[in-house]
Image 1 (spheres, helix red, strand yellow):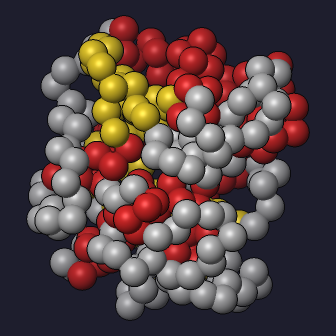
Image 2 (tube, one colour):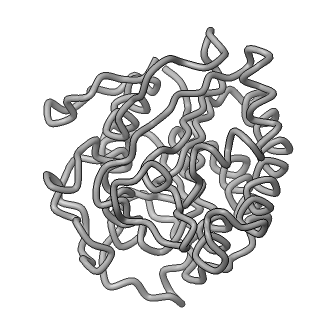
Length: 267
């Protein structure tokens, strides 16, 4: 059984990760990490895919098919499964995660910090501004890891998505945000590995040149999936489904996988 940190780099497309994220790619080349090509579900929008990543179900099944559907998750998910089995959960993430897993309505003043063992996300630090600096978000995630030693920790930086929407997925600003995120990961991942964590890095969706996502084109749906902590490094062949992320986390944590999660773990 392992503890797991999932870093969800919002809006990071596959080709940009390969081109700009030298720490991650260097770890792949040296055998310290493995990269898979992952295909996002449709629509390639954030709230539906946050739920897909945590339930292992496509949007057409879990029902969150729009960013404008604001309700708690009605499905077994990583936070609910882990907390019900007595494990500790935490998240440094956008407020939509609080709405999905801790309840609605979200109060941006009172709900920005949560330390409550009765909630699926027991230790949460949430933000509402897309321009939240990645460096501050990563420090918050690292604080949660050190202070609470959660068994499952979600860290969700928004910088790539923010720059992509402002300037487009082919822009220098977008590429720079990816490179800056890579540097932050280079400072954090070695310490997490030393603390015994399996570290997964992926994205919810990509970004097209117009600064949009939601459709089925490769620039919107192909994202990377990195694993630090496996025995095999390098680049995996073929594509894996985004619905496999939740079963993968549960498998690494030694938790039972619900029958509804039909994709095989990525191991």
